[in-house]
Image 1 (cartoon, rainbow, N blue to C red):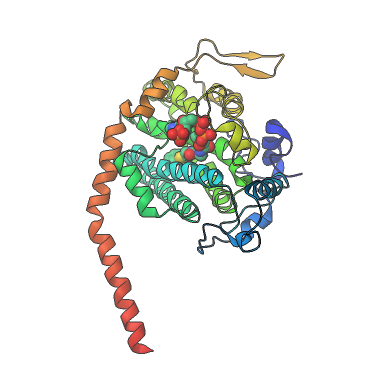
Image 2 (image 1 turned 60 degrees about the vertical axis):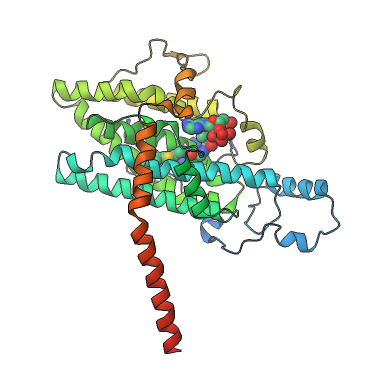
Amino acid sequence: MEPGEQGLGGFFEAIRHAVNCDTKNVVGATNLCHIASVPSKVEKCVYTQGLDSLGKDALHVASATASALEARFQARVDADDKIEPKDWMPDAYRHTLIRQISQHAHSEIVGMLPEGNWITRAPSLRRKAVLIAKVQDEGGHGMYLYSAAETLGISRDQMTAQLLAGTAKYSSIFNYPTPTWADVGAIGWLVDGAAIMNQIPICRCSYGPYARAMVRICREESFHQRQGFEIMMTLARGTPEQKRMAQDALNRWWWPSLMMFGPSDAESKHTAQSMRWKIKRFSNDELRQHFVDVTVPQAEFLGLKVPDPALRWDEASQHYEFGAIDWSEFNNVLKGNGPCNRERLDARRRAWDEGQWVREAAVAHAEKQKQRAARAA
Ligand code: BYC
């Protein structure tokens, strides 16, 4: 049985026991680095750059009706076959993937900013080295994801233009500020924790390039989550002032982290279709609940209090019940009115403008290499 086939609890349980990781017995760790049971065939393939908007199937099915093509496509999805870039796929499937993968890529890139804010002020050389490596990892994730989206027929320049024009979304969570060092811990613990909860199921997404990109990303996110938890543990066990800082960061990041999973299932316009296509394996609410169930005991281990007076363990359902999410805040952030929306986009626009000479130099260098090779031939 593969991860994802045995329901949410069983899925994460399988991950937990898949390999003998050093975090296995640490109460406070999420243990989501255990993704060895991701099918190995997923890891063997590489991206294809040969784009063809109709796909190889089109050569053989000129007379086939659209519904026959769709039925065959859905049968492949149902059989857990991977859909590859040159395969026939419904336009709506292609557009859904472009939307989700490009939003995901933008989130990784914009997500470098809140933590990048602390690189120059990290409290020790060790913390600085780790933080630089983490932020660099997020940049790498963005690159894999832009590459995965490109296999669907959109260019990196188009996606960048959409981000800079403010027409593309990126995760709501990165529109919140990081005023203290504890925010770096809270982001690693909660934001990366929520991200891997959401992203491990994507390792089994029906679209091959996206699924394969997620394997490495999840392994790295798992390390990020643990480094964040370790920062929180150090602060929580430090001076009263450090503990207050950790609690304050938890107070500010808790609710936005729950919002990361997206609107409630009742309000989610894409979930039902995305689950039929196996782009998503679990609904927003299922993943959010699982995050709460896993994270509340971690907060208790840290000696911190989750800022939710309605939070209580329900013996009958074996889940935590939690208070109502303020969806007006979420919608406001999505509309561009969060505390840092403007600042984040300004930073990306500045980086694009200031990187113009690098792009020009790279093109000039490639041209020079080409001419040199032509002369040598
Ligand atoms: N923020 O029908 P729904 C990271 C939008 S970065 C903003 O449920 P779907 C990291 C949604 O796009 C990881 N928008 O949509 C990096 C849709 O709008 P459109 C980021 C959101 O797609 C650095 C509308 O609301 N993770 O790990 O079925 C440092 C309706 O929603 C959000 C991903 O990108 C949101 N939170 O489900 C540290 C994961 N939620 O497009 C860490 C991949 C919803 O119709 N993405 N919206 O205009 C997904 O899994 C899914 O796209 C979502 C939403 C669960 C996010």
